[in-house]
Structure formats: C-alpha cells, structure tokens
Image 1: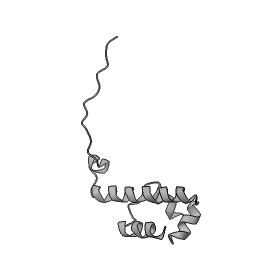
Image 2 (image 1 turned 180 degrees about the vertical axis):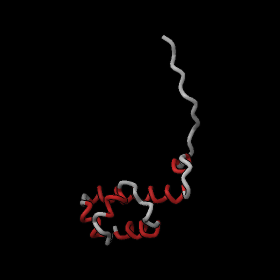
Image 3 (image 1 turned 90 degrees about the horizontal axis):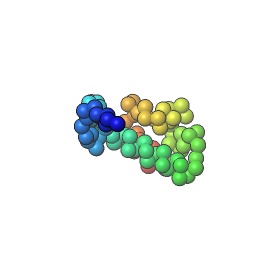
Length: 86
C-alpha cells in the first residue's frame, strides 16, 4: 500500500490569531484567555449564564456571545472587570 503524501504545512506559532493573519492578534489571544477563565469560574461555581450575567452586570444576551468567542466589541478592560466581579 502506497503512503499518502501530506499537503505542505508549517508549524504554527503559539498565537493562532496571528497564524490566521488577523489584525490585533495579541489582543484577540488575551481576550480568548480571559473568556476561558470566565467559563472556568462559571463551571467551578456551577452558575448559569443568567446568574453570571447578573454577577458581572452584563445584559444576559451579551454574555453567551462572549462565551462563544464573539468578543470583538468587548474591551480587555471590561473582561478584566468581569473577572474581578467573580
């Protein structure tokens, strides 16, 4: 049986946003890390998204969007404030 040749590829960096060529890649990576921590804290405390939104003073529909990595319009400062609220 003949081995299949793999397509050409290169090793990525530690920042997948930079690998994708996105502007502000470092900021995106920081925001992603902060959102991961928010999700971890919610799981540890076993609270719902509604309870978490109330805790961090955020409108409930906005929190799930952030947790699904749609955080372009959220500042790093706001995410840090949310973490501090926990």
